[in-house]
Image (cartoon, rainbow over the protein chains, first blue to last red):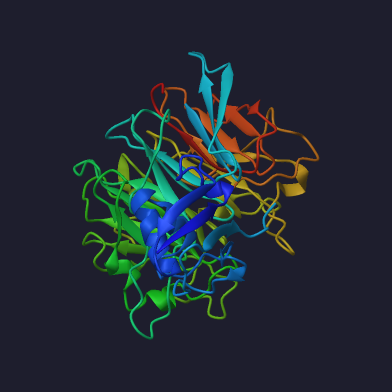
Length: 88
Length: 369
């Protein structure tokens, strides 16, 4: 199942500057695993060692927020990797 | 080269041969939070850096060319996966980096918040939890009083005579010692005050801000604690409060303590205001370094060249260091983004950089990058 991934700017050092990449997988976990295989190190910056999405990251499938990594992704969906508006 | 880790990136100050002129380089990693940077004395071209960003998780970068280029760790420090019913722990920041023993090239230790100890055997590219500490049955009690940012594991010290002899410090938790390479640990806090605890005589729960071991006299340890300045001469287990010899109106609260590279009797501290609501600024807005040359029996104020008034900065625990030159260079970075240097053992100071972001750490790397 293929989808589109929109990559927030803090993560583009991993995607060699690409803001949009293609990926495969039926849920968020599978898509992130696919991204990790192509862009090593990227996943751990978004998801901690207990498989929890980091507090300042937001993952949306189309317009619906994914609360955890089991959230399904369908063919043609867009996974948005978004950095929460925070900091200073 | 003086490396400067800030809340917004990594900078470097390169001196000329006389150390009179310093050229600011950088930033590298603009916008990244740099908690610590350390040079590998066994392989001086190697540097490790602990960082994260406001959004992204913590990681470690390694440079093999003196800081020109950096490679991210393939497996950054991370706790093991929590067992069923066990509270999950995840590294929020890598806070401290220490090269391992000289007999183990490529060996490094890292400390994290929440308090965790990690080891790399391949020069910092792959990290594994040190189970002897992270899963120690007493660890939940040792680190039971986290700050709102979590507790911090720092001051990882390796005895140069014995790679299995280690010390660590936890803010808040105390100082701990291992004699078996990290498999088991015991508290080492006797004699240290813990005014903030209901039981001031508790064996752990203390707040060591910075602990240092003298490389040429490894039985001599110094500690700048939340509650005083201490010295410990092993095999004694009771710390002696050498901060009692500080002027009463200055007190003995601060973050860093820096040792002379050759003289175990000489150390420098940077006192801060620990009264009332704990401003943690220069005392009365008049920053000063204090130096002992007799193991803490007496202290001397050193403030020539530093602002005489209305300077309210803080020097964090990793933000002061010494070099190893014959005339020892001392350096500190402030939360206001200034770097100050002395090449007279602290007798006089001058500002060598300003307008930087909040400085978290400074590290003098020997040799020219």
